[in-house]
Length: 114
DNA sequence: CTGCTGACTGGTA
DNA sequence: GTACCAGCCAGCA
Image 1 (cartoon, chains in turn blue, red, purple):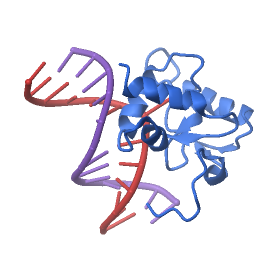
Image 2 (image 1 turned 90 degrees about the vertical axis):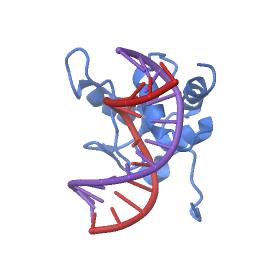
Image 3 (image 1 turned 135 degrees about the horizontal axis):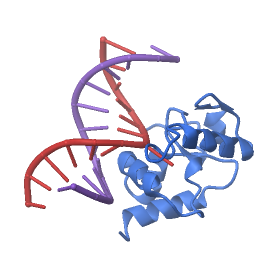
Image 4 (image 1 turned 90 degrees about the horizontal axis):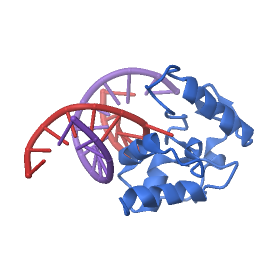
């Protein structure tokens, strides 16, 4: 893969600390606004340490997932993700992000029309 | 090549 | 606010 998946990783790498991005936004930045699902699959396989996959969350403001099955700890990885986000200065309530609207990156114009 | 799966999203109830 | 449904994409069997 040299097109989509690689592009996605590049986008995630560009996410500045203290900010979060949604799968949809990452997919859009990669050139496929509807490939949020595919992005999730790619993230699942993300093993590169230079890719802050923990900054990529669901559009609903939820953490989404992290790690998954394999090994022990079902949500153990999810727990780590939450810790990482909090370390970045992002307040996390349960599995949801506080001030998600403002923490999100890139910043959306308030007058967005979709 | 066909089909199923999944760290998703948006719309409707 | 939450719950359910259908659509879209890349990766893998």
